[in-house]
Amino acid sequence: MDKELLRRVKRRERKRVARSFRVAGIVACVIFGIYAISLIYPLVWGLAMSLKSKTDYITDRFSFPTELHFENYLSAFQELTADGQNMFVMLFNSVWYSVGATFLSVLVSSMTAYAVAKYKFFGRKFLFWAALIALILPVMGNLPAQYKVSVQLGLYDSPWTILASAGAMGTNFMILYSFFKSLDWGYAEAAFIDGASNFRVFATIMVPLAISPIAALALVEFTGRWADAMQPLMFLPSYPTLASGLYIYQEASSRVLNYPVLFAGLFMANIPIFVLYICFQDVLMDLRIGGATKG
Image (tube, rainbow, N blue to C red):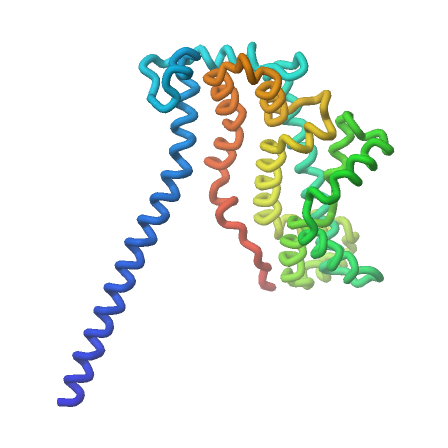
């Protein structure tokens, strides 16, 4: 009798726990659903505004367009200018700025992280703690010093200013340091026995093993650079990117601003980010920070 009662109590407890999990799951779905709607709605609203006429936008900003004006997207290439440079020039500036800065940032961070993680030398711990402290310090605090150094080195308002992106300290360094630290050194030892140099071991063995986090970090870095308006505004005033150029246009034309055309330009400026996310969402969502196992 006691065993039967115990079984009943256990079944009742399992049912209660299952109901609790179902309720928690429903609540979580509702919360995340509301959050998803809060993210999607501004995009849908912006797309609707980009297809309105200027008169319709002024009359009612929250209604959907009664007539679709796709010509706003063509007008964007003519009307949206920053210091006399149209969207084609801004697009070109965005490409070389984002690609160059991303390449230098990820390259230098990966090389530095590998050296600090796998080689013993004087100052190794100092570099690690310097990178950790750099993550704590506010970014805005070093902008005056960065601006002064850029001017004195002749990098200000020059494409060569992307050399400042070759900083080894930061989030990229810490993530790659953790990955390289977990890699089995047996791969490198086998290569050294075959006569490989330090750089060859890094380029042909370590980088392929770390291609997943490196690719994910490169995509995140590129996305940040593409959407960055502050750095080009401060250090590349004569080379407006899409992010900084559209901001300049908005500020310069605030009184006669054609918002539907501006929204069209903003949507076209974000198309590369949408395409990258669709093509590489698995890489972005599955940043595997782990090590290879020795076979």
